[in-house]
Image (cartoon, rainbow, N blue to C red):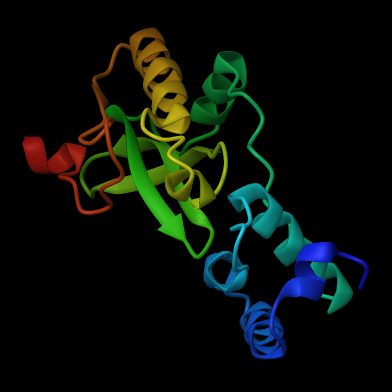
Length: 176
């Protein structure tokens, strides 16, 4: 590999990074590169690029692009395909090994059921290490489009934690 950062990492750090990549632990691999890069310390984007290169070199998939901007008319069509009209539109945080994202749902009652309408993600949690968030752009987009969708449907919009990721925030039906 011809990456100068990779070449300057100690052999044990390179082995650790490859083991983390093989285990699909992207953020831990980025942190291992960052911590092992010595002086001058590598930048986060440089570390992220190196880990992406290691994924490719080891034949692993590495791709998490920001989601396309939400389209109100597309969401209205999705709502029209639901088995019954939603009683509310809800946005909530979720996350995985790559980071946080916001899910937009149509919520029905009796029984309480959620219907996935869209996922909004503008990056991975490397942003948190780099001081790029807050504000969380996915929360801003989900709030804007969720409120517009709810307005068009004549139902409430609920987003219990628009300012920070919280996957345990109260749900819409908990507020009734």
